[in-house]
Amino acid sequence: MYKSYSFDEIKDKLDIFKKLDDEFPIFEDGLYFTIEKKDDVIGYACLEKKEENYYLKRIFIKKDSRFKSHGKKLLTFIINKKIKKGSLIIEKDTPIDGFLVKLGFKKMENGSLSIEDVEHKEQRKKEGQKTVISSIFWNIILAATKISFGYIGKSRALLADGFNSLSDVATSSGILLGIHFSNIPEDEDHPFGHEKIESVIGVIMGIFMILTSFELGKGGLELLFSGEKREIPEMITVYFALFSSVVKYFMYKQKIRVGIETENSALIADAKDSRNDIFASLSVVLGIIFSIYVNPIFDIIISILVSVLIFKEGVSVILDITDTILDKQDVEFVHEIKRYIYDNTDIKNVHDVMMRKSGDKVFLELHIRVPKDMTVYVAHKISDDLESSIKQDFPSVKNVIIHLDCIID
Image (cartoon, rainbow, N blue to C red; front, side, top):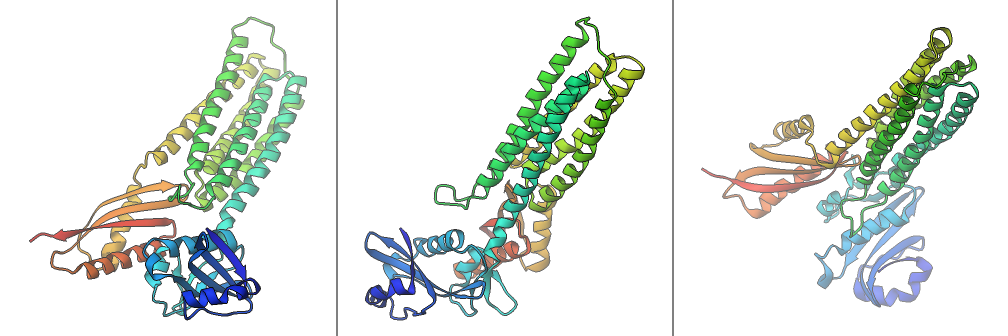
């Protein structure tokens, strides 16, 4: 169990901590965190806050409990649960540098180790949420106006476009849930994190688009072959279709920018849907104009074409995200990793490089060959240094597993 204490709370337990560790630090403004099993203190960490940043003064795990990931669990708890703003910094000349780098700390110019502003980890989530909430707001407005005036103005094409916007409200709501759940920190049950939820939401969104297109297309075809008298749309419906295309353009630009910056596959998929909605609304404009001045049948035809466009994009979204779920290899990225290793190290043989994506994070596995007479210590040091370097220079890489093979004469 993890516990946190202020200095005032720790004072009554100083004897316990001094017995646990002779070098137990005492800071009146310090923050203390422990990992305990019942009443037994397994280890502790002491942080000192200076302005917005936190400095790790000492982390200690009792001898018979080391090498059981207690230190990693304690620091992960501190980073994910307790520090809401500011960086966590470990001053230089720390004997556990390798352990800290594996945990995600970066080397600073002065030799210190730091996890960037912990609040920055929330930036991706906040940017995505803000964009999706804005999308939901505007899609509700568009759906209400297009459905209302499509009905009043006797335009089936505008009515279909309105239901398309209504489906966008549902899919955007799903993406909002995906952003929330995918940013939950990794835990013991989910050591690789929760980022794949974004891909699951993206697939659901694609399926929803296909179902929407089927219903719209079915209704349009039934009306086309029914032989019923076709009503001529009102001119006012043109203006609402034009308004929709303008709004969708700005929504597309915002979504694609944030989606690419945060590597959110579900948001990128939603941006593509908004891009197609632009053309759908412009097609509605043409359909209404032709219906007014040529023949009312064009309004129905355009509503069917809009449904086909929605279907096509739904299939495209599912296929794109399925590649991510099935761990399709990014050949260019794999080659870039190989080039990086060959250009920056003395390693002569890199092979079996594999990757998989989870949200915006990349997990790498690769094999390298080392001389067969090299000691385990040296080989392990090469592997550790390479892992740290890749994670430093490729921020999207969350974890690297390196398998050591020997060079056979």
